[in-house]
Image: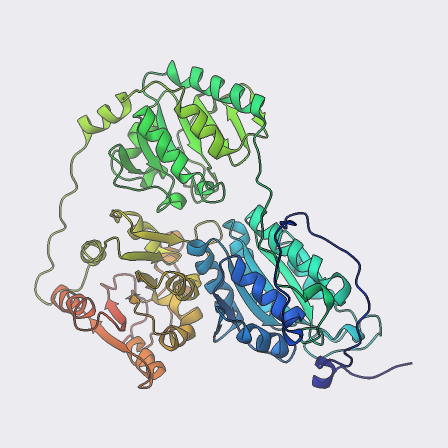
Length: 590
């Protein structure tokens, strides 16, 4: 019996022998387009995968090297137009791909077998929950090790290499284990096209000895993807639009509410078009913030039950008809399922289905098509918005802090509000920042992202890295609590390596503030760090970095002035020492 143990040597190509391939094709590729013959040294699996990523809009790949993916990384680096960004850990690499996908429409990360794959798994699960196409590439075992009963390192010590695959099956929409060159071209194309069509992550495992081997299927430049568009059933679309128009046109004070699936359905523009046509009051669910412009003339704020924007819930819940486009009603978005909504008043529009009150449902109807068709049939009705204007009272300015008075949260976010413009984007960390950032009024062109469905603390550090890399023309403003920052702080280092100019507000409130509100206990108090000194140590004189620790409003104002002025081209880290009314640690020493 072969008792050989897998080693680093097994990750090198053992042979360049090539067997004639089968004539496999992928239905989503344009066949009529010709492509140039590539240099034989470039006709490898690794370069094919790299070229595919560039074609779909990925110019940055987030990675952590490991012995099973090193050869693949060489081929990714060699591809013009593809930038390999080394992260401090796999979790952050996955979060960065998540943030990147939110701006570019698709992201990618590369990790090593099992120890890397299981580490990135949490981030991929978050991307799945948020309907983000992330290509998760793992350097896999040598193809010659499959079926040999060998035990490999980076595994749990069993001669079964499928543990990682089984884990990914529940958080990705497609899995490709590429362990032979004959099927590699088709497997890679099928995986990538499925991610783009389903708006979900996919898993691609590439055997470590195959990346550098040429093969005839890679001898030409890959033909650009031409994904077959999804089409609505025309009869169903017409019937759904007619039924919805009839339902809404007889209502007295109908409203529109946008949900997070507007992104996956690529229907934000169509939703705004419907709002323009109907004149209804327009609200957003909290997880849809940033998907619809808040400068729309009929925008009334965030609908979030008891914690909605002032006067928004009153208008939505008193309406006699409401159209929800792409909603997710979970325990967070419904404030513990406490929304005062009635099914018989609601039209629910999902990416490919329309349900009208207690009546008919229409399948095979795409949200984008439906909203466009409905806009042509809807009668203008501004009653709900007129009611909103009658009861609306402008929000007052929070009173300024007294000199040297500890900072209050509302004062901090008033200052952040004044920083926002079309050249900025906001990343809101899970927890207390969710609620405070929801109150920000986004000017035209200002980006906004947070992870509401999955809610993984620490997400924002990697997501800020990825989002900023995707849109270097914007300055990303990240609002991160101290507890969350301790989970993923290392990749501030990667931001510096990439020359990013983000502004990070580290909100030091002495622990897990959001959990204090849910259920308090000593476990919600964390060891305080000297966060500015930590970032200074990470900086270590390399790159542009500026830090400040502020205790009062005057210091905050001065720090923001510096960050947006003399240090506008630096990564700026501002530790904000909040009023610590919930602190249980008597030995706290800022």
